[in-house]
Length: 410
Image (cartoon, rainbow, N blue to C red):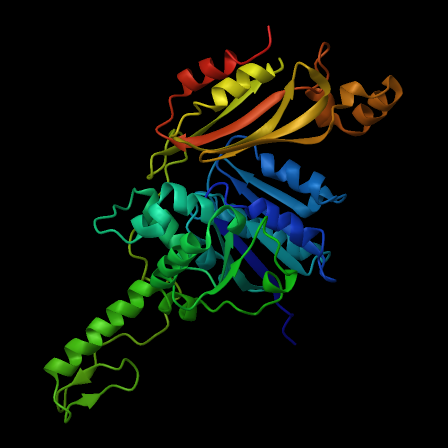
């Protein structure tokens, strides 16, 4: 008897769209599933992994598998497959969630997942930031312009919208009704048959994310707007150039003259050679990928001066697409904050107290149980630190580092 296949949901979306927020919502309301998670980040440090385990109250940290310094749609594809198979072999989980890096294209990941014998891709969920589409991409209209190059960010966004079975349009509260109508019109042009859910802070029923049985590779691929238009164009050409007496091949739908053999390959090719460009990120030893996106980690043990950071935030570099990490301020030494930027949206939220602010007895107990934290412990500031992953296009690491250093407390 064949083993029951373990369902998998893939979360894709551009940097800062809300994937981790959505992931945490699912993990805190699993509806009877025992969910394991694979998290992918292109930075040296997977900040999301820590935030997931903390915000979703995950006690079994083995249920979270971090994959860093690469993306799972290319250089880490085999690592992802191995990670999934290892989780399945434990017998502890009956559902797997994958949060892809913000610069991942979903199709190659889906192809890799489909090679796993005891796994089944249940849902590919795309997450888009409505406010960002309006603010930075002309209400989404720039996604429809002619002459988009493979290296353009628009190309990546299009692929993330095109190849999904569920699309979450997040941050609905930050755009007007008229702006949202335009965003929806653009989405409908790119992927007319996807299930679209408008959300604020990714508040969406868990049933729309896991256990949907919504994904089918060929259906999702064939429903992309450009495929529909291509098919319509081909249909018109066929109507113009073929007589009614021509034979129609039942397998491929093409017309053939009397006696003409069909030479099309009708076998189902699992590698799906439909992809309209060859994707090849350059994560190994190179600072930027094919979209010009690079990343680095800004790490300091000193605190930020709140006023200085506020002043710098007002002129935050536009080419920083996304940054996320833990920080502390000199005027609130006991409090840890998560700094998060997404385009021009910048926020810092309280996430708990540093261990260094706790009684000595508690510090010693935690450090004895967590060797990684002990390794990072500083004799002066304890576990306090600034650790920010900075992701952007054509980053000037030296200048950004210098500007952030100028925001440190003296």
